Image (cartoon, rainbow, N blue to C red; front, side):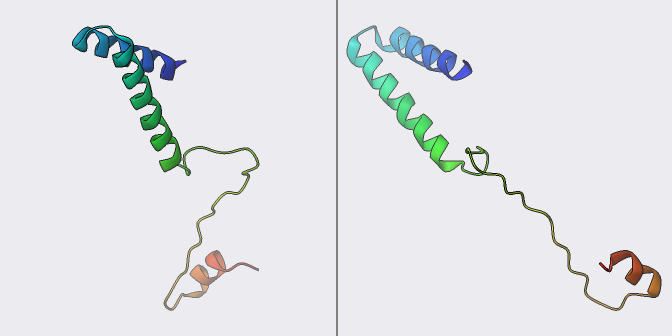
Length: 77
């Protein structure tokens, strides 16, 4: 719903600025569509597509000498 309101506001603003004609409306709709497509394609990590269930779990590597207390806390059995 919000994208439709933004598109309508863009068309209305362009019509108020340049005058109402079908060429202005068509050019603004084309521009907003291309911009929306570029934004959609450029953000694949933010949009979860159907079938994507994988998650990234942080992996930590500890380098150096650990005492017995730290070794017990960070070591996986």
